[in-house]
Length: 394
Ligand code: PMP
Ligand code: GLU
Image (cartoon, rainbow, N blue to C red):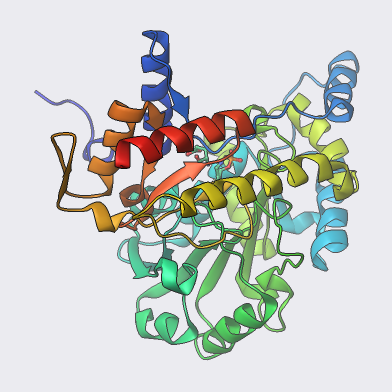
């Protein structure tokens, strides 16, 4: 008998985390696995942030924090939004959560009723789909491809809008495609949304600083968009703080209040020490991250160059984040070393079995033609991984 709820039975396991777990398990069994599955910087958290955390422990930040975050942190986040994004949020617009994942979960729970539609330009980050479904929402995928740099056009957006459309969710720089929308592109999207004032936008900017394009645009900074955008960000990626679990939103006050009510019943305020450390992180000049961003940039060039040398893989040049998302569909229907490759999942499993390289199938991100590599690992391992892949595809 299955005693679990329909809710959990209908929930898919996070495929990024599942692949990372499988890679770890195979490694523990002694296999020489190179894991390009998880999106996680391979750097340590910068020392000045660790110092702030140690100080917070010594200063006894050990009690429950305010549910929406320490006011000093919310003020620092407002300064960050002004400095980096030209957004005028007040502390009442900010909610600090246990990772951007919880920020997104709060938003879905607070904004969606059963049957509300949420437009997801595909590929989208793996958890959006399930978080929306858990809240009773209906994800409406708008497909893109490598040929259009995985970006949607204003026409595609307009076509996807129905009377039931409540929100649109995207990340830029995008996980998994690395694409970055320009101000011009967002302005054209905002123009479409002008006609539909009831649609809200979730702008996931967690990869903001890992951006090689030289420009970054927050859609909330486009005239008319501030009051209908929920800007999501966090320290996991840019500050190499995935385990600290701090994310945050800037949102209209009624939404911030709702998210606070939600997490007040579910988790209470986020970890007190991590919040104090985050003050140091968001107050720092983003230039302190240059050494990591430069390393990612160099690896991006390396991996894109190596992938271009592998016959059959099609790739865009991702402008941000630390992922590449090659189209592998030219292999579908072919038999490699006795294995029939029907789809991207078969392809990804083939690379794991034959090359000992862990990737994530594009299916998880709503694009069945591609697979995702995370290049947040050493150049040496990247070169070796690409060598192995080339060999098993030859
Ligand atoms: N959004 C995107 C696009 C992500 O890639 C991730 C993965 N970490 C998250 C949100 C969640 O971030 P966090 O680790 O802060 O929960
Ligand atoms: N966001 C990262 C990824 O996409 C980490 C894993 C996760 O949270 O799903 O790989």
